[in-house]
Amino acid sequence: GESVGLHLPTLSVQEGDNSIINCAYSNSASDYFIWYKQESGKGPQFIIDIRSNMDKRQGQRVTVLLNKTVKHLSLQIAATQPGDSAVYFCAEGYAGTASKLTFGTGTRLQVTL
Amino acid sequence: DSGVTQTPKHLITATGQRVTLRCSPRSGDLSVYWYQQSLDQGLQFLIQYYNGEERAKGNILERFSAQQFPDLHSELNLSSLELGDSALYFCASSAGGGRSNSPLHFGNGTRLTVT
Image (cartoon, rainbow over all chains, first blue to last red):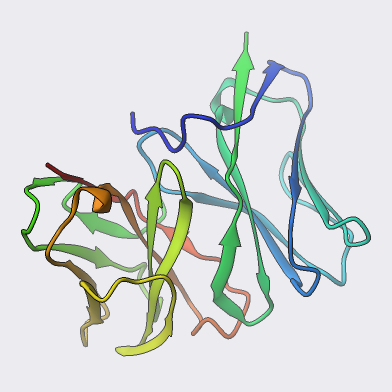
C-alpha cells in the first residue's frame, strides 16, 4: 500500500493493551482539534474531535485529551486491536474554519500479536 | 466507506502534461476540499469549494485549478506537471461551508506519478 511517510515516529503496542498517541500543536489560538486514522491505501478517516472548551472527550474505545496549557493533544485507544494499525494524524484549527486545518506529520501505530 | 468517491485511483503521466482528478462528495455535503499528501510535507490544504463557489485557498500552485459543478462534484486540474507534483491527492467533503465544525470526510485519494 501507499506510504504516507517514511520517517514517521512509530508506536508499537501489544494487542489488548491501551495505546496513547501524542501530538503537540503549535498555535495557541487553535480551538478545534481532530484525530484521523489513515490505513494503507486509504484516505484519512475521522475518529474524534474536541473543542477547546473541553479537556476530554470519549468515543467508542477512544478518548481524546486536550491540555491547552502545554498545547498537547493525546488519543487513547483502549484494548488495541490489529485493525487499529495505521497512521494517526492530529489536526488543529479554528472553530468554524474547517478549511484552515493544519495536520501534524502523523504517528504510525503497529499492533503486535 | 466515507462516501466520498475519487477517480482515478492511480494516474501516471509525463512532465509537462495536464491531468484532471475527479471527486464526488458524500450525499448532502456542500463543501469539497482538496488536499495534497506527499512524503515530505504531509497533508497540505489546497482549496475549498462550497456549493459551487470557491470558499478558501491554501497552498495551491497557479498551475493547479479546481471547480465545483452544479451537481456538487468537483474536479482538480493539474497542468504543466513537474516531478515534484507526484503525490497523493485527496478530496474531502463536509456538510457545512467550513464555517462550522462538521468534520471532513476523505476519499481514498488519487495517486499521481509524474515521470
